[in-house]
Length: 154
Image (cartoon, rainbow, N blue to C red; front, side):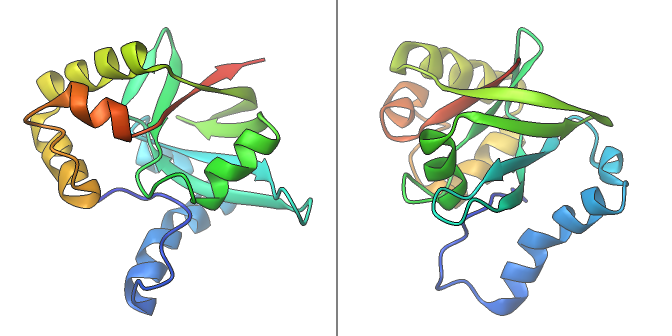
């Protein structure tokens, strides 16, 4: 199951609870139990200025920098917040630190998705069911529709 922030408003309260559950693990210092497959992103709300937390699935480690998909689309709050203020903080694999968000271009995104599908076919199918972009069948076409964010240490 992917744990992305900005879950659509039409999701049931039970599913919303499940999506938010990993944030609680990070808040009590147990996020490392999720390993390097997930990270907790702390970012500033673009209108409120308040710190927000979102747990995201890491689909690649691009040069030691985690790459996360914007699975619920461009209207996702955490994504819009990062576009407004790319500086953020992550906790990943038990280590915390500042990062800068970088949107991958289509060629980079295609390369990441091709490797992801080849290396993690089951997880790629799961993500594909969530986003419905034909990721497993055509990673290049999916890269034209699915934004990927690299979180580079600062």
